[in-house]
Length: 378
Image (cartoon, rainbow, N blue to C red):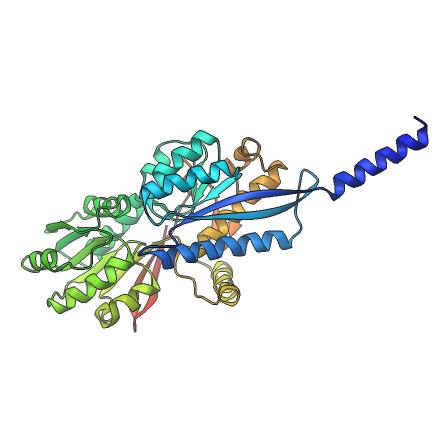
């Protein structure tokens, strides 16, 4: 072959390489059907927004143009469906997974991702067990239940000065977990757990357990579960004349709780809840406000709860891919482990277990039926 032909072949090869484009699939799982579908759709909308933003940047990996594609699945908050869609994502050859919401679906699904060597970042799973399995590719961008439940318990005892506490959980991994951690932390002179009851995540009538609780005259009712149960429960508490404060974790800490509970949400301070995450400082507060505005403009809906954490989880995963110059899990996982990323929700770094370092919690009450921030605690 002549020198000219060799040069021409090299030029054509380079042009072909430059014009080639790789498609990187990123999985997303949330409950887009069932009682907490409003939270699941919130998550999926944020994942789609993140993918749209990434593709608008015209990124490259290893010198090759890349298009990111979201593969979204619905786990319906059901563990069996959760593992089924996890395997579906593995079979689809996704390079990473963002999700799940519920601890009860995320934990069994995490084993499937681990066995396939696919990193998973959860924006909502708070059960400590999720990362204590020590799967190398399991991460979360929110604080876990030990911090959530313990912080709420300390606030109840030290700030609200409650003495008699009743506890209800919905028998889910999340609900039982956050309630257990709350009970562990509810210690102090004269503080008593006067009753422990449970319901289910799909129940609609709580009369029997609330009547039992009413007889024990609690100062506070702590509920481990989601807003779809918490809202109607507040209504039934009001109907039964239970005047105790109501407290819960991030599962009830939504704007939807105000709508579901109606006037039973009561005056400011009647309901106290904590959201896993939170920002402080003018710069981060502006970043979060800007995200909420843009989310509304793009989706036509207000942020429900987890959207900012989903958005950041996608961005963190792709940032690790960029640092590695590859979307292959074995290549970018080491970068994910040592990532330092400033997102909408603040600075994101992971500890050796995959938990977010120095995770924040935000305490809220309800004012005129709307969430109102009390404080951010780290």
